[in-house]
Length: 209
Image (cartoon, rainbow, N blue to C red; front, top):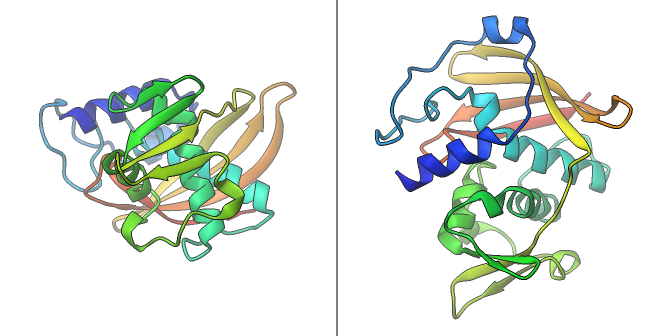
């Protein structure tokens, strides 16, 4: 139940304006209370999958732009870890399981795995943390927790502009917008597949147009 409530809280603070066409083309998930467990592909009550998966999409897009790559691939350890770090640094403070330590967050490994699952990643199978990220995220074996430097990206807004379904795959088209002047920093296409995790889905493909 705590994980479901956390997903609701995270999505509630995201600004993800959907066009009328996107809303009408999307199949609405059944409404259910936070106390109910949800099946893979369902999301917390009154949230669209685009809302629920906003942190994952945001984190991956920022990492892709930083690495100058056009497609997300979990096999790229640096890209995978940075995508996960972006999620944790931008949204982890909204998780009730996090602890604030000055400008850092302390997150139990179980919590970090919940976020990794939205990227279709398993912490146990990921490569060691890249050296380039050790100034921003570290693992404490004694506490079995990750210490994460908080990030800020208040000027970039994620917009999901179209949503389609193909079987059990959800296809999203949208852009990352620079709020100061409305410039598109990147346009993307993403595929989400249902998963039994906190977010209800996992990013299985994401490419820049």
